[in-house]
Image (cartoon, rainbow, N blue to C red; front, side, top):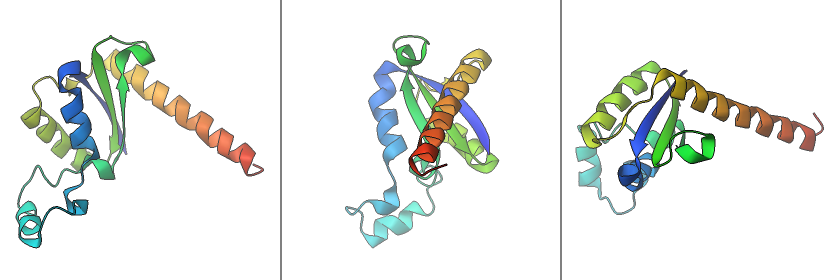
Length: 125
């Protein structure tokens, strides 16, 4: 699985968060006709909620204040579609610089390792 990091301006954070959390196929407000329409919508079928992702405030991870960092882990096909959707829907969302990307990936992976170690100790590992 590929790991990638994007950076977003604070102004677009609420819209990005909503996009990441939304799965149209779980939306009880959509009728069957609308769900059928979704099948042909290339952006509606790039569903971030079904992927591993994390959205972090830059200041909380030692990066730029007023920026949000989206960590995304998915297969290569999804990543290509995600790049397309993010650039289409958001003006400020761009791929993070290499050093920012490395830092975010490191923070996320460290947190996951600590969480896994904690679960291991709870269950006698």
